[in-house]
Image 1: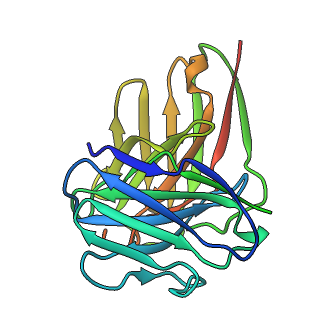
Image 2: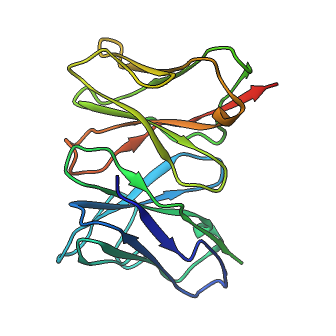
Length: 114
Length: 113
């Protein structure tokens, strides 16, 4: 199973600023995804991070707000841009060795926007 | 997947009893299902999975049952322990794997001493 490290683990940010979250996997993986988990709720898929090309976003999420990079098979970043209090949430990176395999998750980044 | 609710349902069981957590999924095309356990401050942890060509799969103290006719998934935990206290999510794979998983609402399992 892949071990996923995320940083920062938590941050408190000011409205209007941006935060970049890093995700490092300890082995090469085919699939990487970013999820959001709002307080007391389930996980919602933000986007699929594609290696070497633009990420694929789910309905309700756009690249200008959540730019994603994936320069290689073990690393991805998610930026939360122009933050507002509504962006306060846990952001989770996940990865799978292959398509149609179970996802492993990092511990998440708890973001609070003031 | 299910729509996201404002509050997670809660299931309270006595330590040592068996618990059953239920989940309804929405996409008939989903062919892969997973149960995750999430403890406070941590990311979801894989528990057990099942593919649509099976209706039952057992792990250590856990059993997953799949009823495709009514699109229902359940997780049975035998002889619950304090460490089983967590939020449990079911997840389905509606896009054949390439599109990520869709998560259910989650159930907060509380183990009473």
